[in-house]
Image 1 (tube, rainbow, N blue to C red):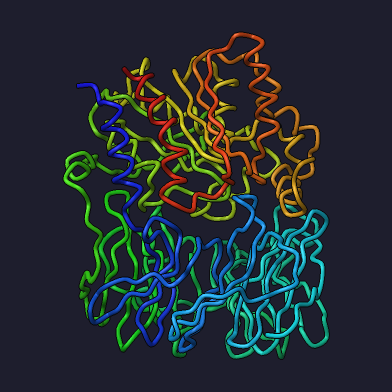
Image 2: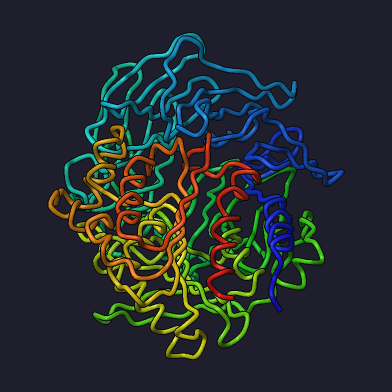
Length: 581
């Protein structure tokens, strides 16, 4: 039975209106949440008594400094350039319920990492020419140091700023850095040259972080006084779980808080003991009023907030968003996790959502590329399932979640091995009978949009239609149009192989396009800019290729509201439904 346009719109509006939360802290007013509330990206508070959620931020939130325990103040950024990611820094007083601009007399810039210790604020600010660490002491703003590569502030304590990034010229390593605010001195530190070090947080003059210095990703400490590294030996439930990577390392009320990832899902631990929760992905946790509160989500359900006393298997769902009857009847796909063998034998971790054998099937390609599809709610995936598509979501080489060896396989080879992984997912879907060879499509956003274009011109005929959002058509022109951090990103991804920028650009193979293509590009996107896409489309037009282009006005790369999601997804979904009819 054909789905009407009006029903597609209703399904998308219902999906986009579902609130999505991540637990990030505790205040005197309740549990602090970050996510989609009342239609926009927001900071909100969950009252643990009334179990109601109230929005605190006036504006759409771009980035937030993780709140401190017992400090009822929140620092966040707001994009003031219609999606071009020029940010101002704002200040929420939870008790007074006020939201004010914090720093005056500063040129708006891209802010990509921020920390607040109750007094000082430190952040990574990006201009056309530099990536720098800035400091605000409540009165004045200072640029402290320029970073020698792509780096991000993550923590601040006792006037020591901590962060991580690729700072020594090796695209396959990530170092820690500290900045002494008094001495204005940058130190780059690593437990082992060439190792990957992430998620640093300062506690009691020590830096706790994740590192692969000893092989697999594990927890380590750097003592700021002795300047020595040591490995943390996990205990109890955490050791049994043995996570592959981590989402969070923090301390609350002198307790070690960890979220560990493994095989596409995530669990939380407090002092090595597992926090009971439903199966899926724990994406946020805090301690509040003697209880543990966590946000949990999956590909089957949006964010729930659970409360636990840490007893064996004990938890209570204290908040769960309502889902319309229309969606309840449609979001019934069977979720499985498998590993698909690529052309060179690499095993590709993949989530599959099966609506029915032989149904139209979409290979969904995530962005990043240093990201992943976990067992967590994604509107792009849930909208496809609600419209009757099977979805195959490969975590191609370069994805996070499966160890640094796997993630690093993409560096120096974007559009190479990862393309073969995406093609292998399509072939697997057809060989297993999940997909019909005449009704298999590809869709992605950002790097996933690039992989969609690249697959359509590099593997012509494999996918019967391609739906690309915020895609990259020309790496060379993107590089020229980028600011300092995205030039560093491209240099890092391509490992300095400038010749590959042209070779791996879809615009270099536009003549090979065989099947229909839908492109949605945002007017003010400074990550994947519009100009190169207009040149790509002009070449398609000259050759009479079948395509459609939708330019979204006054919008950037980041989807920050219900309105943004509908503007991007509606043309992509309508296109795919036409392809499959």
